[in-house]
Image 1: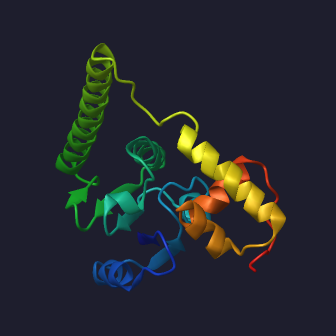
Image 2: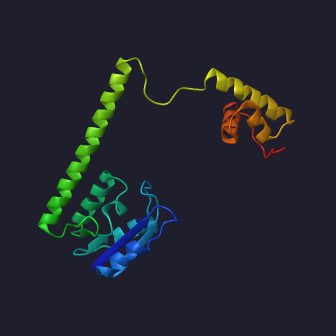
Image 3: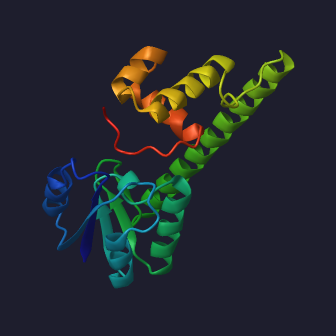
Length: 195
């Protein structure tokens, strides 16, 4: 039996393109889900995996719909292989029910892993080169002196209650969001004050 799985990341996105394609290739059951690719708990994916039987074929529009990362995708594929269930990806033209499809999938996964390792190595080399020139990578630590002074002013103005949030932000030359950030950093309880 062909079983489809379709996923979108947000409610703004539409599942119809995927479900239409899955129906067209003969999926008898289609599991649909709205969940971020990074989310570990995907109810419909778990439900589908628990119902699969030997000889079934899981069909997806694209492989990235199935796994939240390469590692997760390989884990799902290993789980399906253990159950003797195949995978077909419409867009990627991958079909693990054939020896060529399994070979192509494994080679693709190896290349993707190799590419990730190269990116990691280049990033590491770049950071080391920057450190050798006296620069540090990563986020700046803490607030600048100017930002600290503005935060103290913001706290003072806010606690006095004589100015509204918009006026305070204008006075110290920052956006409202930055003003709220300063107040949080100064551990000022922010109420619904909007004079």
